[in-house]
Length: 224
Image 1: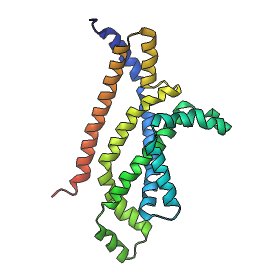
Image 2: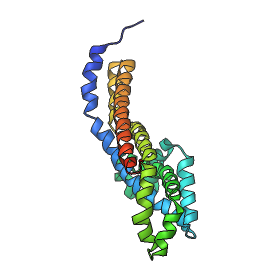
Image 3: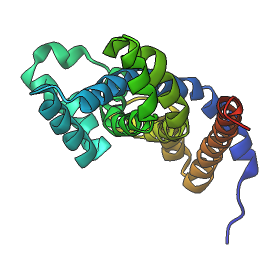
Image 4: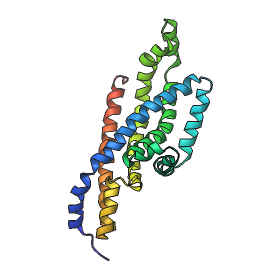
């Protein structure tokens, strides 16, 4: 049984860490865009306007019912065949688009459930004093729904970071892409993938701790 080459792992880790900003950048951009889109979809699901609600249900069903990898290939390889202007779209942009659409479909349902979890008596009281639906959402519902949805949304962000590893299939040299290339040239596959696994693990653990701190701060005002 061969012994792990720790010197190789020690040399590889700093190089992989230089690719970490690309991974975190794609995940952060995807999360921000997905949050905006998911909030819009959630409001549509709650208010149920004709036609828009049916289109939203179709969107959510498609992006929750198909694998993210298939969606990435569809955006990067498939759509440019139909829309030639998309040929210039690079792997990073396609990955962010895929993450945005895929995770917004899941996040929309979480946000909708959080909105539905706000005490109905508060919404009735706000409407009784003359608030519009828009004011009700901005001032009463969404702030409270945010506190409810934060733990789930943070979990989606963590999943999104791990999902960026699929970007290497589009030619993006992020954490996973850099690991794959180095492992192919060195033939030290176990050491290379163990190193990147540890990096992902540390990042996720740090975010999990941040999530707990954020939850504690948001719930502090409601603690008795």
